[in-house]
Image 1 (cartoon, rainbow, N blue to C red):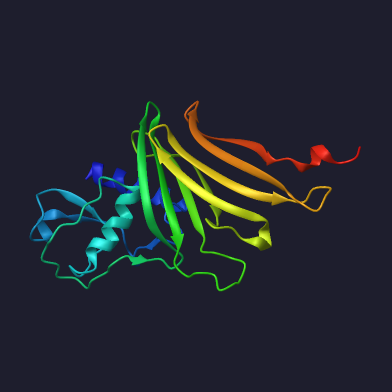
Image 2: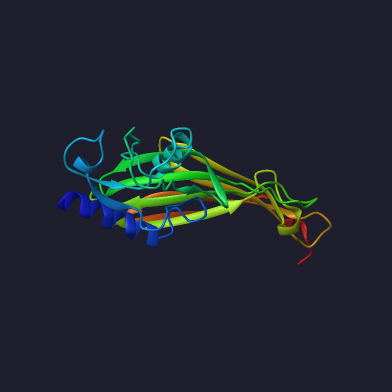
Length: 219
């Protein structure tokens, strides 16, 4: 019971940090601790139940949950109570995710895509990268989120947005146009690399002028 209570407390703490915001919503009264002997098909003990779904709906829900919590699992059981399947969306869906084990805990990055595409002539679909650091015991140590349009959005001057989840850690790269002194705008690359410093999530932001046309302006 003590382990189940600690797991439930971690979930509640992460929910307050909006870790699943716009992506997953559990039913009222969930998650909750359930004695395993009350659910045929579970091993003895206690479990934290996020919800109960029809078999056809479970895989998509589990895919979303596991993007943030690798230890989550689904199990086929005999469920006597009303079904309470977590709702996906309404804003985002998971594209990919990756975790990195650090001395201070687990660093996780999840790439999301907006479910409803923007119906504007100068906009593309939006993506977001949600980065979270958790201590070995599951405590929330920090989070950060960056969003953008992979193929650009003229209205905001953005020309591209890309997330890289390589072995070194997550990196978010954005390209922007910025008005200069002439007819041609500057092209700026903004890169965010994530590391862990003193037990906290540390986004390192760097800016590079790919096309710095202001260098040719009159003083």
